[in-house]
Image 1 (cartoon, helix red, strand yellow):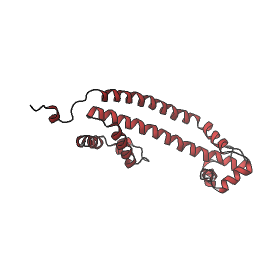
Image 2 (spheres, helix red, strand yellow):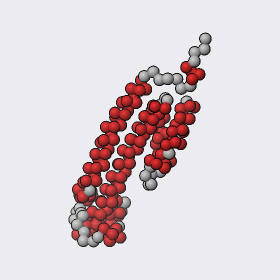
Image 3 (cartoon, one colour):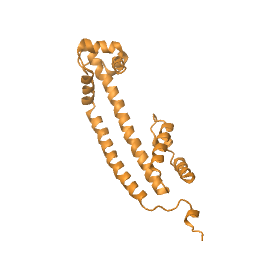
Image 4 (cartoon, one colour):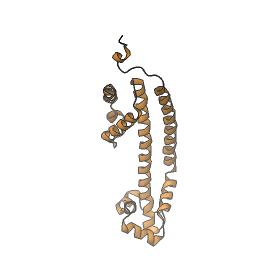
Length: 184
C-alpha cells in the first residue's frame, strides 16, 4: 500500500492537475479530494493502471465540469428571462438591456426564493417552469453542446472502465522486485 501511495503522489506532482488541468474557478483541493476518492476505490496497481485510473478521474471531473457550466449558463439565463416577468408578465420580453436588468435583481430574488419574487410570480401568474423553459429555449445550442459532451464523456468512461477492469482481472506483476524473487 505504501508504494501505491507513493505512485499516486508521484503522478500528481508531475501531472500538476491544479495548474494545468483545472479551470480558474475550480478548487485544487476539491479536485485532490475527488481524485483521491476515485483512486482509492479503483485501487490501481502499477503505473499503467494508475494512468488509466487518472484518465477515469479526468473524465469524471469533465462530466461534473460540464454539468456545472451548464447550470451556471442556465441560472444566468433564468435571471435574464425573469426580468420580462417583472416588467410585463412575460418571461424574456423585457425592454431593458441585460446590463440594466441585472440592476433590478428580480431574477436573483427568484433564484433565492425571496418573498418579493414570489409575490410577483403570484401577481402575474407566471410559473417558475415557464421562466426555466424560456431560458432553456434561449440557450438551446449551449444546452445541446454540454449534453453532447456529457454523453460523449459517458461513452468514453464506460469504455475506459471496461478496459481498466479487464486489465485488473489479469495477473498483475508484483509491486516490488523482492516480492517476485522466490527464496528457496
